Length: 136
Image: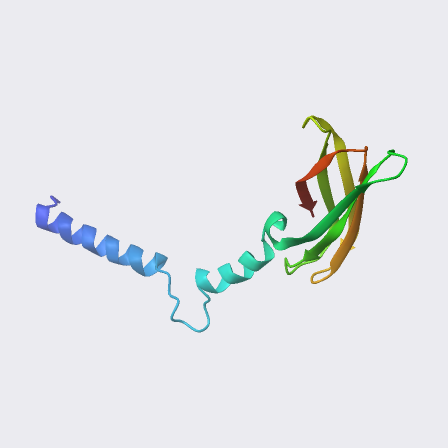
């Protein structure tokens, strides 16, 4: 049996229609949620902790014996989920801008909506800069 050009064209149209029926995204059916229904759920659960953990104002001081720098502040969990571990780090600098160390604080079991009052301690330093926040 020889297939003509018009027969091949009809066959391709039928195959395309069958493929569209099989693989279409039917969001109008109330029983079948489409990707739009599930993406909003996963987007709120998979937020990057670096963007949804809100850092409040911080202050720092070197103790009277110049043994340590203490940085205090707050972190609020606006991520919509609980974290079993959260860590915040600051780089410490001398008066010439050289890195002299790191101040770090960590917290376990930070629940959604909670605010953590941290105290990060490190070497005595002239200045400091927020470095990173990690959560899982």
